[in-house]
Amino acid sequence: MPEWSNWSGSVRATPVRVEAPRTEAEVQDLVRRAAADGLAVRPAGTRHSFVPLCATDGVAVDLYHLTGVERIDGDVATIAGGTRIADIGETLRAAGLSLHNQGDIDVQTVTGAIGTGTHGTGPTLGNLPSGVCGLRVVTGSGDLVECSPTTEPDLFEAARLSLGALGIITAVSFRCLPAYNLHERIWFEGPDESLAAITERVAATRHYEFFWHPSRDLFEHKTLAVTDAEPDLLPDRKREYVDHSHRVFPSVREAKFNEMEYSIPADAGIACFTEIRALMQECYPDVQWPVEYRTLAADTVWLSPALGRPTVTISIHEDASRPYDALFGDCEAVFRAYDGRPHWGKVHNRTAADLAPTYERWDDFWRTRAAFDPDGRFLNDHLRTVGGL
Image 1: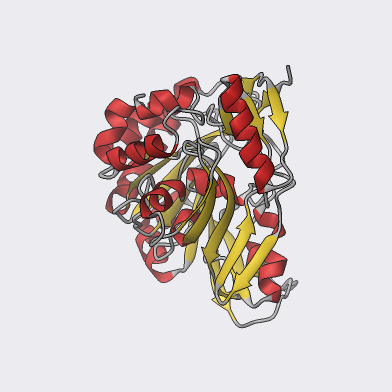
Image 2: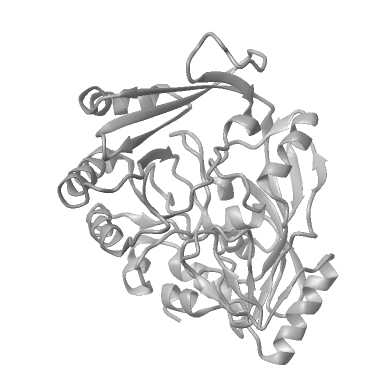
């Protein structure tokens, strides 16, 4: 049997087979064959989840043949499901468009990114699922279904952040913005001035985030501002440059790590971070990886960690070669005390019993999931635990 692992090496699986369909018809066929063989089906993505979200002992599906921007209609771009975010920016730019926001990892497929709620930063900006306006999904019966807010609306609402739990998404339509450039600026400060300025900087900046380096108690601040200036390396300025948005958003992540991220109500973000900082200084002074602090607008996506509330996201990292259970477990207790919701693709220890009360559309999601995949073809043990199935 083929061996499968995630990017950091923390999750491993042995699927019966790995399939790479070249057409939507082949996706339909593999789902029907898996059903005939009694096998589960899981989308593999680019393996950036830190939990067993994609792990299966059935059929792992890699969509790397289903790629490219299919069409652009006005401000809507329809993109094949296996396309990496890194591979769409230039095409959108040529059409005068850009995604409304991006995370700092652009090697994910578009379906993997929306499937776990990938996001960038900005208090007026939503995550990637919030920009989705249409989808094509191969359901548990092997049928190909198009959905939107007006066509199969329940499937649309569930599928735009689906955990891969109700089908294989073969195409995603995003509503885009007119193309824009960004001016990136990075600088370092100590804790007193940094903590005093967080609220002001979040309010004043389209994209603002910081990384706290615990071993030095040093804050690395980053802002991205929309600008009419042309691309420029700004050689006379340290840690600043201007470029097209899709070139500015990504960061290179070569060293491997594991990660926990929680979404906190925005008005509790600073208090939660302050408690995390104190915990790590007291109990985990040897951690070298930074803690990241970002913001998100409230949205209406059923399983979005930002559902119904302006949000701060706080991310804890640890080197892939080091144990992380104690660190992440203690941090998770703090996050939960602030009504935190976990990032679906990052380490957490939550189950349906304690997740359901935090999501007002929780039952709607799992009801819709069952309607389009009544045999549980797209489930694995991790999803059964998360969903209480």
